[in-house]
Image (tube, rainbow, N blue to C red; front, side):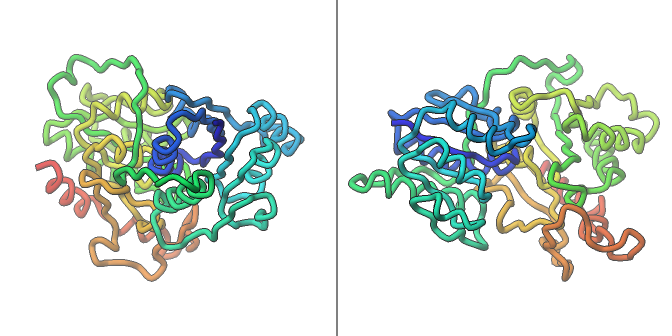
Length: 349
C-alpha cells in the first residue's frame, strides 16, 4: 500500500504533525509513505523507515501548477492521499497524483478535489487537529479494522549526526537560547531581555548555545553585543546561528539541560525530545500551539501571569499597533526579564 501525505511547510507545524503521522504508521505497518513538504519539514523524516521524502519547490518556478503536476507524477499513484495543509493547491496535488482516496479539511473551496473533507475544528491544539484528520482517513480506508491508538505526545526519531562541543562544555549544564521565530517579528522576545537571561544562566554555571537559522544571525549578534564586555567573547557561549541543519539541530538539542525559546519550530522539537523548556508566548494562541502533552515544557506569557491584554492573541506576524504607540508589542515588551528569570529559577532549581 502506498500513502501520500502533504505535510506542513512550517517546521513547528511539521513537528506537531508527528503524533498524527505515528498514528498512521501504527495502523499501516506494511505501507510505504511519501511525505512532501518544505526542505525543513521533510528533513525531519528523511531517515525514517518505509518513508520517501520530496521537497516541494513548485512555487520557486514560473509555472507553479505545472511544477506541482510534475512533482505529483514523480510519486507512484497512491491508495491514500492526505493533505495536512489547508490550501487549495495541496488538494490539487493529491488529485494530480491520482490518489484513490483523498482526505483533507474542507477549506478554500477545495472539497470537490477530496473524497472526505471534514470541517476544520476550531479551538483545539494543532496536533489534535492533525490527528483527527488522520483518524478520519484511517477509518474510511480501513473500515473493517479497529483503530490502533498510541500515547498522545510528539514523536521524533533523532537522526544520526556527528557533532562536537569544546572540552570546556564537558560535565557542564548547557542551556539553549532560541531567539528567532520564522513566522514573524511579533513572536520574538527582545534581544536585551535574552541577554539578561543569559547573564543569569551563566551565573548559575550554565554554558550557552545560541540557535537560529542564517537569517536570524543579526538577532544573535545583537544579543551578544548587549552582554557585559567580559561575556561577549566568553568560552561559555557558542553562537550556532546559521550553522546547523535539522539533523545537527536535533543533535545539539539532545545535549541541552534547558531551553529558553520563543514560540517556534525549535520549541516543538524540544518538546518532542522531552527537554526542559520555557517558551515565551505573546501574540499566538497557546491553546493551539503550546508544547503538546509535555510535563517538561512550560510557557510563560502575560496571560499565564494573570496580566492578559485585550489584544491577545492577535495572531499577527507583526504587531498591528503603530511603533510609536505605548501599546506596540506590549505583549512581549511587558514580559520583562525579571518575570522570566523568576520562572527559570523555579524550573532549574
